[in-house]
Image 1 (cartoon, rainbow, N blue to C red):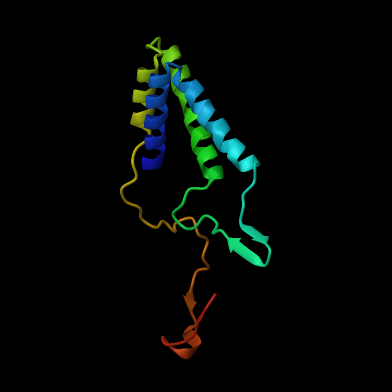
Image 2 (cartoon, rainbow, N blue to C red; image 1 turned 180 degrees about the horizontal axis):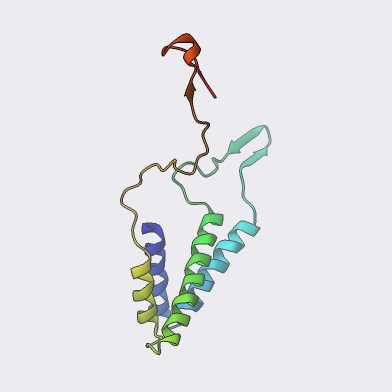
Length: 137
């Protein structure tokens, strides 16, 4: 969530500087990301016996499509927070919405593997050959 919280902070700072609503700035960034996707990408150029190749996005790099999803995620959550504030007659200002969003965007500091949903076969020892027998399922 650090990337998303940073994106929210960036959008908020630009919206304050440009004096436009935060949601509008989020839409601007989403549109820019979507436009960069629609223009395609350049991976190889060749001419006159010479060629140059460009590497694609690698592990740990955020792609334009992922950035577009970040902006859409923030816009959807902005709308949900705005509606919730309106429902409880709270101020619906950009700072109030941003503060609520930051409370919901909790940074991930650790992760643990959770294999509880994996449906593995139950291993039953084949006792015909003793306890050292072949496991079967």
